[in-house]
Image 1 (cartoon, helix red, strand yellow):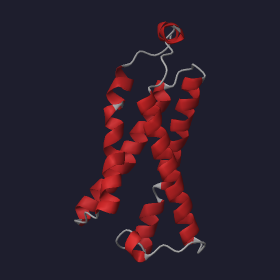
Image 2 (tube, rainbow, N blue to C red):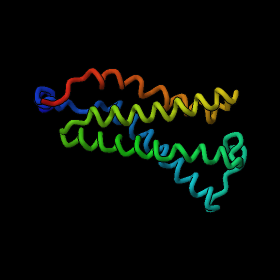
Image 3 (cartoon, rainbow, N blue to C red):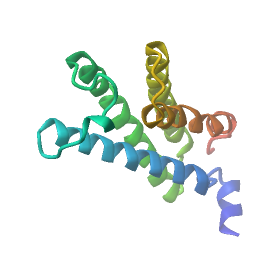
Image 4 (cartoon, rainbow, N blue to C red):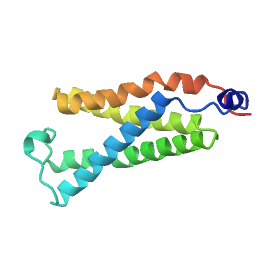
Length: 148
């Protein structure tokens, strides 16, 4: 009953699938960046076999870290969208921004590895997933009516 009332009021809740996708992506990338920082600071050791090709090249390290602001923004908008949905507020635009940023980050990485001709599944497939999964939700978010 309350879900019907919320939909009538323009505050349809976020789907569990979308919330789960956002949370999994946000947590996974947060862990990635914490581990990357710990590695860079010498706190943890990661065998070279687990690092992407050219990881010790300063240009590739800079390229990798250039994604941090994009990933942080995607994470922040995703968390904000989930919080807004739980508070029965307008969350669609926030989620759309998060998904667009995640898809962009994944697409940029996929494009880079494709141009380099490197298809290491441990790096290519996760980035391909980050590029693709938001595309299942974005069209519906863009078409969805906003609250009145």
